[in-house]
Amino acid sequence: MKSMNRLYSICFLLAMMLPVNAWADKIDLEQVYRQLDEAIEQTDQYVMARENRIQGLKAARGAVDEPRAQYDLSRSLYDEYRPYISDSAIYYIGRCIQLAEQMGDRIRVDECKLLLAYQCTESGMYHEAMDVLNSMDTQQINDPRNKRRYYITSAHLYHELGYYCKVPWLQSEYYAKGDHYNHLIDTTGVSATDDEALQVKEIECLGAGDAVGALRYNDMRLKQVKEGSHQYAIVAFYRYLDYALQGDSVQTRYWVTQSAISDVKNAVMDQGAMWELANKLMADGDMNRAYRYIRFAWQCANTFNTVKRNNQISPVLTAISDNYESSLKRANRQLLVLAIVSSLLAALFLGILFYSNSQRKKLARARNELSERNTQLAQLNSQLSDLNSQLRDTNVQLNESNRVKDEYVGRFIHLCSFYIDRLDEMRKRVNKMVKSRDLDALFQFTGNSELRDKNLAELYEMFDSTFLHLFPNFVNDFNALLRPESRVSLPEPGTLNTDIRIFALIRLGIEDSSRIAEFLHYSVNTIYNYRAKIKNGAIGDRDTFEAQVKAIGM
Image (cartoon, rainbow, N blue to C red; front, side, top):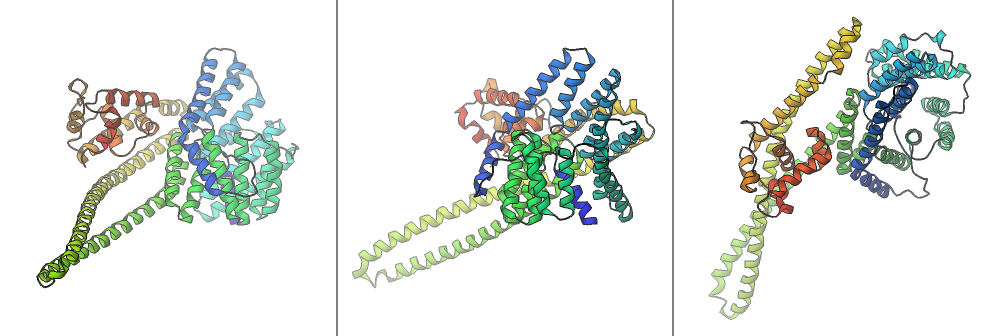
């Protein structure tokens, strides 16, 4: 029973975001992976499309005063933000509740409260979700669909609590409550053929270990949703779970990859398929793809901005990173063996050379032949010399990489510990406000961007000090690549400005403008402009300027 409940929770946990392509008789997983890689390369375009829709809705919302129009636009903004940025989704569904209450529309008030409770549950805000549900009187919910949504949301919340609970008797109690609400869903009298009802049936089959039944319900759901839509993606992800229950490894990888492709194309930041795929690729030994995909999922999770999703991805990211470190150690051992072999070859060469010289007088008649051998030996010596030079360069690069990695790992661990403590303090403060129901103070506290600005300032200060510690002469070497009138100066010792930070990140190997923009909290276009302005002031060829920057300190 407990394993069934856990599987039920996993289904709900991972299923709010994912897509599907047309069925193929012969599945070429490599081709599907390439499609995912191509979609990731075009992420900026998909994100910009969503941002344009959001800006258009905000502009339209600011141009109307009538409550119903305000409600419709706020609801549309919630739909856009729901899989994109959790905090913004919660804000706009809260605004919808206020507008529905202003209009006296009880059905919409109930509907939006239930959407808020579900979003809070998806974001790991279980206490807030519980408060929202407890504030609702089920006897006053007259709309059958809202009553069913209430049961679905309650079941989802309690199964989530059960999945993460570490107290056995309390975990059993949560699962029992979730099952109770799940059984009430069919009592609402709402059609059992819509997607919500079919999803519940499919999850019940998954919990019971009935993969055939689950796939039957999934086939029905696929016929009802539009291909390429976010809901179509969710149905596809459930299909991945169905095949996983069957143990079909090819089908599971195909469907989870299709889901990840659709997530990327729909600019969905609440990634589930991507880190599931990374897990499977890591198990398959495909470490390069696993690392690339889990890093992308981590960046998306930071945009979606929920601690819950970050906590889910962190173990996968850590495991992949550990495997990378093991691979690096193996490479170092191989280099050591190669160096020993090279030394032995050099010693052998010297021995052959000595022997050749000592025998030259005795083999006068074979002088021409010996001359040719000496030429060959000289070529071998040159090759060995080149090989030793390459080994020395490789060792220098590896030592530099290890030094930078060790420095940043230490600082990263310290920074993680610092922000964990700070998040705990924030949790305690918010918890205290919630307990005292001081909603004004809570709203003011959560709406204040001062803490975010302070955290960013501390992050940049940590980055600046760490980078200058690793590359103390970077600014002087950087300016040496620029014409005098284009050179940059620091605002104060130990602090970098935006121009230097951008090229400091490039020096560390972060060349993608979108990733630099995310770190510095600028738009991608702004980062392009900064880079172009600096490169225009280069002394040499502007096309090789960034390569010269990456060579600083080597």
